[in-house]
Length: 255
Ligand SMILES: O=C(O)CCC(=O)C(=O)O
Image: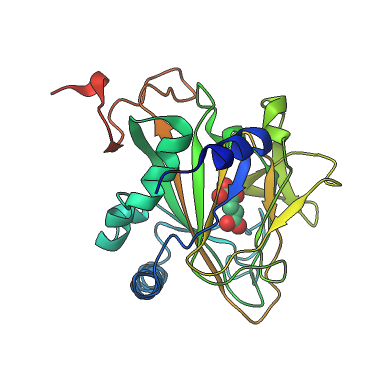
């Protein structure tokens, strides 16, 4: 289902949108959760290759307790996540916001385990990516119910309209977190986006957002898919012509 005109206008005004319908049906959700857990378990058993703990500070023991776990390119690791890239409702949302010819920028699983889930500081996604034009969108899908207790998304409405801002390396207890950036901002206007499992939100790559630690007794498993329009350039000014085409035509890569 494509977004209504009102929903598109709301996204264009706020820089994010809480989707008003369930994106992933319950039986499908069960399958995704099972495979998600399996991919994490496999990666834990192989010395953590491909699994990053974004909460690890420089110079601390690797078995540090706080865990903000990330696995990139889930679509290459499990068929269910490959299929998810082509899920009609997700692509309809992306198409409503960025247009017909859609490529994958990348996907990622972001897991905050119960009790020890780490935070992700305020940032714009394009602070990491430096893509041009900066009009990528991300659909963040809750695989568990998420709220302020277990680390739902918090956003600054309308922040994307100000354009890209400076980021610095994030710190925890004054030690650097090598894998995370942060933007120093005034978060008075922040809005929380609680979601039921199977629901999602979409945000612009310049929208400031953040998630809190998960100190609750509930896991917080999330999947994010980052979509770009054909013709998008990376930070070196190279067109990402070979990224997976999800919908429409890639006229830059006509074989
Ligand atoms: O899931 C999280 O905790 C952080 C999500 C995020 O930063 C993103 O989707 O860009």
